[in-house]
Amino acid sequence: MKKTKIAAILSLGMVPAMFWSSESQAIPSWARKYNVSCYMCHSGFPQRNAVGEAFQNNGFRFPDATEAALTKQKNIKIGNDEWDKLAPNAPFQGSFPQFDALSMTLGGRLINYTSQQSLKAGGSTARTLAGKQFNWAAPNSVSLFYGGSLGDDITFFGQLGGFNGYLTAAPTAVSPTSQLTSNARVVYRLAHGFKFAMGTQFSAIGWNGVGAGGVVNVSGLLPSPSNYAELQLTRGETGGYSVVAGSSVDLPPGQITNASTAALSTAGNIDNHVYLRAKVKLVGAGMLSGANGTLGNSYNGLDNQVTLGFGLSSAKNKAIFGGAYAGETLVYGADIQAVHNNSLVGVAVSRDKDFGLNNVKAEAGYFVYPWLFAKVSYTDIANTGYTVAAPTGTAVGRHRPTVVPSLVAWVAPNVSVTATYTRYTKEWRENVATLAESLNNISDQNTFNVSLSAGF
Image (cartoon, rainbow, N blue to C red; front, side):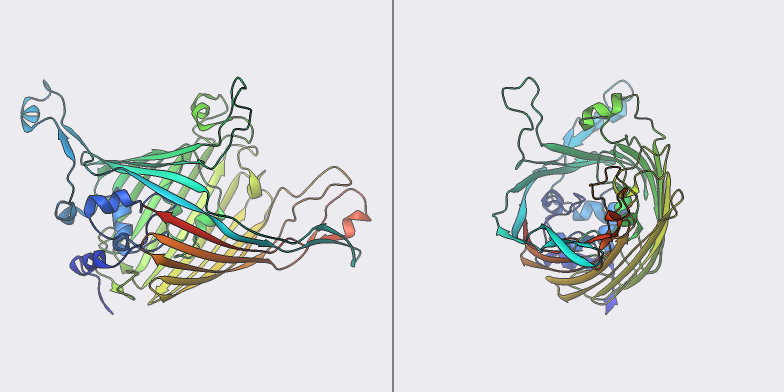
């Protein structure tokens, strides 16, 4: 155990690294700028360690006292110091990245298995709805990530995905629709620990705890924003707190065909979806300093900590939220996360106002080695979209709890392999019009898959 002084944390740059984050906050562009391993900010994809939290909370820059010293590839200046002396009669100075702002990732499932799905009528097996499947494939999903700094306070990053996609209309059609997706986020640092951001993905409310390398937080049980604008305030040289408040122009499903038309749609108003997230780090390294805590494992950089969180998402009407939250206008919840040495535990709960449905997710993870992370999770998200009108139709059950053990190994600094088994713990009731059919119980298909991700 040792104190996470900045100098000690910097030594993590010598440790071989993982490569990128689904939040686009560990793309190799950052590693090129600072010439360090991504383990400097991440303990495992996509979990951020104490330094990574401070880096994100300060507008994707290191604390002011260390930013200049850590930057190995300076931005190329646009203009000169004389312009500043002549202001406002001269243009403002600017800069753009000297380092390569593009990174590529390759991923996909290598092995996929699904169990048989059956329907039981009145307790006896009646028929098989879907048979077993077992197959494999080569990785075929490619994304381009980009990110960099513009001047001292503006940061941009994003993702171009869907290069494994297809046209939903024939190429000869008048307006073929591609599967290509584009998500971006632009951050303006208003002051140390205070920033404004706009984007179509990668909102700061994601916190930590997405996928392997981390454990759940309350954002995993709340509707996510799209086409958003948000403010984030963070404080803490030791422990600390962070608050994110935002507005999202979410639209009812089916009203738009792509993100470019969202801002022009009359259905897209800034008060369609408003959200708030807050968390308090009771014990651990500073959320804005990345220091003054205790490292449980000096290789993955996780600090021993206890963190509490709260969140809510509010919709203007019942047509805004989709999926499991369809028909709801207010969902709120809380979480607790704890880390000690190589062990992580997280529990999150949420509830909606309209239906009174409860959601829960609990996860426990353990770093067997700095490059090998095991996790088990239990999830029970109540689904509002369970009713159908047709007598012969089936519907999604309100509660379909799962137990999911997973294991991820970083077999090389930029390559990870993840094995995941998903087991549904109970059958769900078919909700149809006739009494006889309403007695049918349906089992979900359990799955096992192995996936690969690589980036450079």
